[in-house]
Amino acid sequence: RNWYHHPASALVSRLIATEPLEGWPSAPKRVAAVLPFFGEYAEPSDALVEGLESAYRDVEATGQPVPEIALYDSREMENPEAFLRWLAQSENVDLVVGPLAPASVEAMVTLDHLPVPVIALNRFTAPGFPGAALDLASDQELGQLAARVLDVAQGPVLLLIQNDDWARSLG
Image (tube, rainbow, N blue to C red):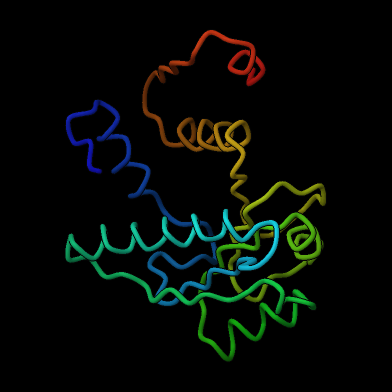
């Protein structure tokens, strides 16, 4: 939904208008969603695909260009570096979303170089990952969102949280 009347709606356009990270496409033409479609993470993967499809339709309805979205099963990613290189060179992918399963993320984030920009979708412990990460657990996602807002905010920032142990644990 577009919450055009919400006071934060103006901030969203400023967040979107910021420059992309160095080496990242400003408008990707082909996005690969690398997700586990079988097993323990199949259900969250299905939800992610539904979210991508919904966002695709929303952007397409505005008349703006939309990237092609290609789905790949992360079980194909036995050698993360070779798989990412194949996506970039043979499949013409210019942005990867995934993987999601912790073991796949840990195997990928140890790479020193990524042949294509990657947004990993889970926590990892390896330092120095040259991609980006979006943890789907709300506590880390909130921290990432807060850091991004503070990067682009041009004035005071107001944060409203519930008054309970979980909210206080966020710091």
